[in-house]
Length: 314
Image 1 (cartoon, rainbow, N blue to C red):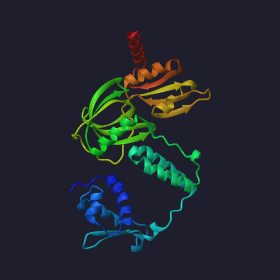
Image 2: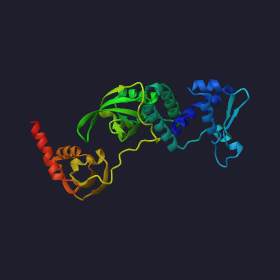
Image 3: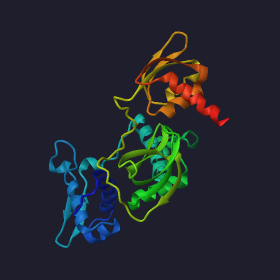
Image 4: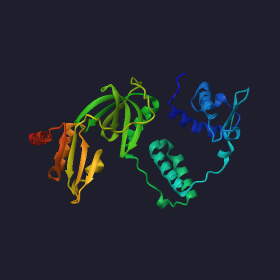
């Protein structure tokens, strides 16, 4: 029996355990069917529950699972879990923000349940509706995000037409989607790219079109999380001096070193991930930037080349 990834099992158990507690003595087969599992898969998941508890891990501090000769299941929570949860104000605020974020992350299918949970939680914390936190994980087309979630849940490939900002070009790629990740105000799709024959991260707002297939041909993910951008050690670096009007660069791109000067300018070191990206950045900044140092990059030649390309279009 192929074992599902750990994060999927935990997510499923967070639904299974409360349901069994609320419906004691239900038959194993009925529980498995309700959660779209085989009896063996359910037993495998429930085997984890025996290890849940708090120090000193004595019998009264552990969660107990009982399955009788008729395959009926009971879960008895440890005394600790039966006590009302006492939250500090900061913990309550964090829970409220996390619930709001989960509502956006889960999509429309769970919106009513999460809306109800948010209302109850806000009331319990004494938070007025006008003061509720607005959490935005990232900008993205809701229809496109829904289609990507469907592909992930159904384990099918997608063909995307993708605009690469670094290369300034569009490519068509067949991707096995693994997960959606929100980071720094943007949604990203992590998956296996058939074109690159490797794991890739795609910004969702740069996906021009999407087509779902009926099967998956890619490699399964071997991690439970997405690795965001990390610069290669051998990639060219450039040190720029930015005028105050161009400090938006610090928020828009990953930086390695930042040094603020007394005159309001800022010296920043950037990794040049692609030449076309660097050319467009320099043309956009114009006279608001000065190149101080560069490593492995002929900056002036690249800037001149970028200007020539723009002139050719005119």
